Image 1 (cartoon, rainbow, N blue to C red):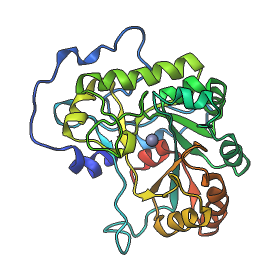
Image 2 (cartoon, rainbow, N blue to C red):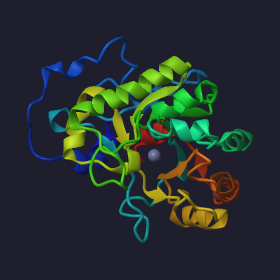
Image 3 (cartoon, helix red, strand yellow):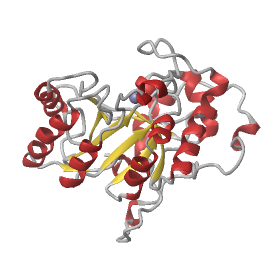
Image 4 (cartoon, protein in one colour):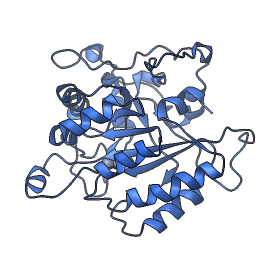
Length: 298
Ligand SMILES: [Zn+2]
């Protein structure tokens, strides 16, 4: 049943244990943000026609409650063993990055949002998953709310601070181990304050950087970490064609692509998406959110 869990187990399985804290079940203050239940996802047969999205699938925690990691197969030569009949689906994901200390830069005019990109995704009707930092939701509450209100999108957690959960990580400041869960919960709190709906219990490590310590420390947050197999290279890129090419070359059935939703650090993304979407559709691909990819477990 838990196909996804089985497939990615290798990333989370690491011997035993450690101190599994009994305190792990409590969030810090107030209601916790509809976190993932550790129970297995519903059977595929439960597909519903309701416009209200059903409970998003999650993966079972690893040993000692470690945060599970959803990872796509790395694209090798021929698409990997057993992938012959894989459905042609692809998930575009967009990181809405803003670091905790970037407020002054936003105040002086730097744009960490990208409304044109969001409008394009709507126009092209591309279901996608936005990994949003809590700081971004604070800076752009109306946009955060609008994204969350649109069934085309789901909003996942990209930490509050966009600091690193393992080191080194692209020079990002590091979150202390005992502050990791709080940082993630603080982002969920920011989403709630902004009125963001369609929040899914998925988490993307800033920079994709994590280690076993982070997976253990984050257990109380009850999230499923989400990695990717296709790097778009849109960070600080100015050549949209090069970004588009990199994505088009990398995508395989079931791929998960990482891009960004911030003009400041990814100014070419919208133009790249304009090329990527029609081309992939022409190749027979269908765009899905991460929750659908996880459900398929393909
Ligand atoms: Zn990021």
